[in-house]
Structures are given as structure tokens and as C-alpha cells.
Image (cartoon, rainbow, N blue to C red; front, side, top):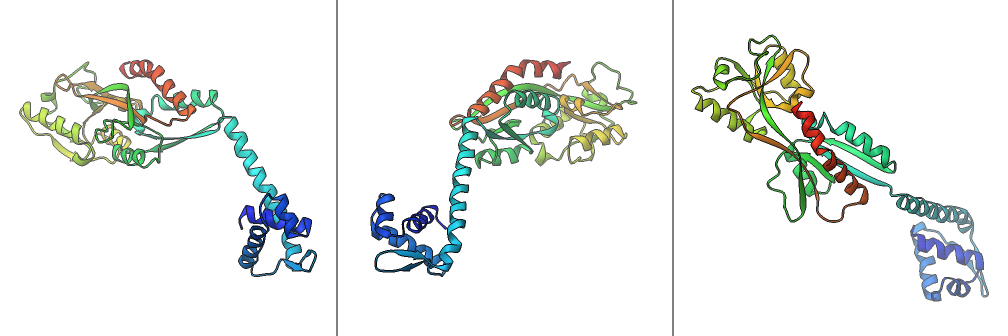
Length: 303
């Protein structure tokens, strides 16, 4: 039932006259008659008993009247609530993120942001890089913390670097090389490697294989983990070693260590992506908060 039609019905019921209702509603009588007729057709009942000089509510009309008044009142209440929330700056921000790459900074950053923006609702969505690309282009998320997204339209999306990571050797705590300050790739030639599948980790996977080949061996890859925590658990359990971003140290167990590799120099930035135009004020504030904290986040990773 249309709100405008219900208002017409209520006005006719109050004034008991179509012409008077038209004058009060600042319209013409045929429009009032059409609204009432549409409502009667929708409900399948007659709402008024028409006489020569006035109209009276039918039994069905008498039942509808208080309900129509309630619907109109609720419509006003909802509009008022929404208006108040807009005045107070209420907003929802949908955030896509890479779990391990963001685990050491995003919780504190968001917690501090929410404390100063109490009318903002933040929704977190853990997503792989390709899922973030899809969600950004389909407006399902407002901001993404991701690795490189070269397919995103630079005219439409802004990109800001949050920090730069590098690949490390991930070793069990009891490994002979675990206490080294750094190691060479050739020292890992006889190890069992735990690496993500090539289609999930293309750039890093190809980089590792090429460096191994340059050092005279092909890695013995025995396991493809489903995620970073699976990788850490596998290494910690002595199933092999891995090469992964240093940020993994923030979820590494006590029996797993990260050691730099001399030949591995691939830089792995984490970027923040968001639309260039139409940003809500709260989203702009979140972007500023992230950029202000970026130097501290880089220091956290290097420590």
C-alpha cells in the first residue's frame, strides 16, 4: 500500500467528502477518487459508502483506518530516525583485508578509530586479493588492504602504501639454522618446502623458484597449505620449511622463527585501495588514520 494513497484515504475518511479532501491535499477530485479506487482494488473491498452529500466508512474502511494511521505514523518515525542518524554522521564502512598481512596493526587501528567515531559501524571481511578486486569493483567493500591490484582502474581508485614487507625463511625453532641472523638460499637446497599453490601466490612463487634455480637446485615442494596459519602449523610441526612474508611472525607460534635470506630481495608492499570520489566523511577519516599510522606500522614490522 502506497503512503500517498493511504494519506488520501485518511483525509477522505476525516472530511467525509472527496472535494474537501482534494482541497486539503492540494490536488483535484479525480486524483482523490483514483487513489481511493486503487486502494479498494488492491484490498478487494469497498472502503466507503457513498451518498449524495458525503461518504461514510464501510465496515472494511473502519477496520483499515486505525491501521492506516499507524502506518503513516511509523513512516514518519522511520524518516525521523534516519534523519537523526544522518545528522549524527552514522555510517557503515565495509573493509576487505588480508588476515596475516593486517593482523598486527588493523585491530588497534580500528579500535582507536571507532572510539573517536562512535556513530560509525565497521564491517570486516577477510578476502584473498582476487576477492578484494571483485568486491571493490562491485561496491561490496569501501576499502581494501591488499597486495598489488594492477587491474584496478587508477582513474577510479586511489592507492596508498601502508608498509613494505620482504620474504623470510620460516623455520622450526629446533632447526640447525634457526639461530642464524641470516642465511643463503643454497643452505636450504636439501629441505622440504611448504609453499602456497602457484595460482594463489603467483608472483612470490615464481620469484622463489627462479632464485632456487639460480642457486643450482629446484625446491622439493611437499605441501601446499590452505592459509598462513596452516603454513605456520606445518612448519612448527617439522613437516618442512617455508619462504613467506615477514608479517607471518605476528601469528607464528613459539616454536617457529623467521630468518632473512641473503638473495631474496622481493619487496611486498601492502596497499590501501579506495574510491577517488564520493567518500563518506568517516571513510576519509579512516584513510587519514591509516596514513598517519603507516610509519609506525612499518617500524612494527621491522622490529
